[in-house]
Image (tube, rainbow, N blue to C red; front, side, top):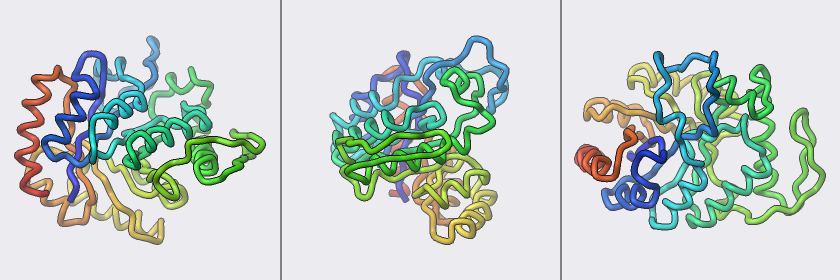
Length: 274
């Protein structure tokens, strides 16, 4: 089983390049980082985690800038978005950013995507929250066209462009894997457009029947990566038993020295399962 880390990279914590080096030196397989372009001052949407929105949400670096810095100082670490908010992103620009990251990393990019939860944030990007699911699906289809066609064009409800050239094309073929975040409501999107499921942290016992339902919907085996996995060997072993491909330990946003100490402890546990 693969073991990686998910985190928020902000201006208050360890910088991307030292983080990447620290992860690779300790044998971690991947890094997935969160995205929020901004947080509206007046926010009606409740935080899904309950209570006040943590400060890290207000301070995230652009994920593709941060991951490019990580990729430049590592050799094997997979670099992924966890998640990119496609409902808030121009698909032509996003296709270019992901392909550029895949080139810089020599084929190590993972495009983790989701629809998002903060309605005010997406409204500031001109997105109607009530249609964000259809919008994300269409943008993902357009992005795949840009990655895989020399002359790409797309004509849909939300995305419309005549034939265009766009380079670079991704190193990975046919394109970087698309990991779809969300609960069971995302299963149809995974079946139609995704390569893997980014599952929220659930106990192995609760997650196993969901994986079976996903496979029924998709009609195929779907790799599963689980977010925010507790640093508990029994829980990690439970995920391994049900066939989870990758677990991601959650790394709090901390200065470099504290981050390294936390990674040392995580690596000791990870070594038991690698």
